Structures are given as C-alpha cells and as structure tokens.
Amino acid sequence: WTQSRSAGTYIQPNVIVSKNVIIQGAGAGSTFVQSAAAPTLSNLRVFRILSGTVATLRGMTIRYGAGILNDGALQLEDSALVSNTATFDGGGIYNIGRLGVRNSSIVSNTANRGGGVYNAGVMTVTDSAISSNRAVDSAGLHNAGVLTLTRALIAGNAATDAGGGLYNMGGARLALRSSALVSNSASAGGGLANAAGGLADIGNSTIAANVAVNSAGINNNGALTLSNSTLAGNTASN
Image (cartoon, rainbow, N blue to C red; front, side, top):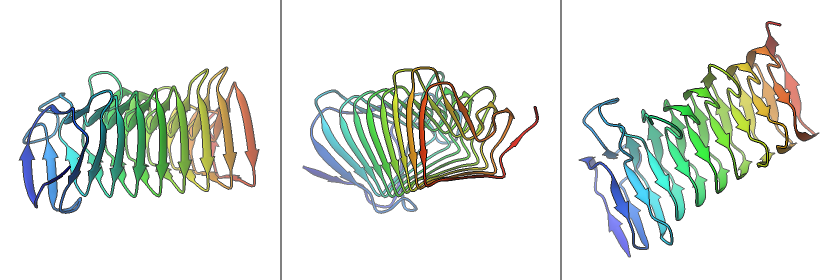
C-alpha cells in the first residue's frame, strides 16, 4: 500500500504506523511533515513505526518534533530529518528495530545521547550525511546495536562529553566503509569514541579535522581494526 503526500506542510505529531506502507512525498524540499509549527515547540515523535510493521518513508523532510521512533523494519530514502529535539535519546531517529537510511540527511537535531541517531537495533546508512547535530554524548550517532555506514559523511557534530561524530558502546558492532568523520568535536573522541567491549571495523575511510580535549580523532578503549584509512589534522588540546 502506497500513501502519497503532495508538496506542502503537514503538522501531524505522533503519526503511528501500524500497517505495512510506503509513504511517498514530493521530495525533501517540497513535503514537510512535522510535530509543531516551529522548532522546540514539541518533543513528540513525528513518526512511530510499530513492531512487526514494514514501512518506507521517501521524499520528505521530517522536522520540528523528536523525529522517528522505529521499532519495526523501516527504510528512509531521499529524505531529511532536520531540527528535531528529543528530551532523552535520538533527536533525529531512535531505532530499536531494523533501519536502512539511503540518500538522506540528518541535520541539526538535538538530544541527550545521539543527537542525530540513537541505534539500539540493526541499522545501515548508505550515501547519506549526518551533520551539525548536538548532544551531551554522541552528537552524530550513538550505537548500542549493529551499525554499518557506507559512503557516509559524519561532519560538524558537537558533543559536550564523548563521541562528537560517533560513539560505539560496549557490546556494539560498528563497520565504517568508504566514509568520512570530519570536523566533529567532543571532550574525548572528537571523531569516534569506541568504548570498552565495543567492536569497530574501519576501512577505506577518512577521519580528519576533528577536535577534542583528549583523543581528537579516535578514542579507543575497545577492539578496533583500521585499514586503508587516513587520520589527519585532528587536534587534541591535551
């Protein structure tokens, strides 16, 4: 079943998706689905994908709420998550299901952890950008599950504590392929913080121009494999 959203602005907080569906917008610059009329007025999720549901969100901007809560199987394509704010975790997306993000952007979202994304499920990110997000920990992405990024740009995210671009928790698995972690900032691990017990595999990627008090490029306390990759121009003040 395909549901079309024509160009326009739809103020619809807490849209619950409980049936298999493709929601097709007119493009990220034309169809806007939001919880409120302006940023910071609502901390309700814009979309909630329920367990057992298979859904695709395509061709829209999701904003002015707390983004997406996914407990099902979700594909996000050709879309943007912009200016969302979560009270706790996952400003743009909170994922506890299966999630694929393709050709999309997650920009200027805010949360306690995972300003852009909090992943506690299985997630793939392909040909997408996660940038200018803010959080106490893990401004770009917080990974507590299984996360694979391919040809992804993680840039300009800022965390007060650890993991400006990405934080990989103990027990989590991260694969970074042909991607870039650039110009992120944090107290520790400006680009990446890999916690004790975390498994991170980085290949053919660039980690550059990140800033931190300690360990500007990578702060590693877990298991890290780094191959055919570049670390350059990262700056730690200690």
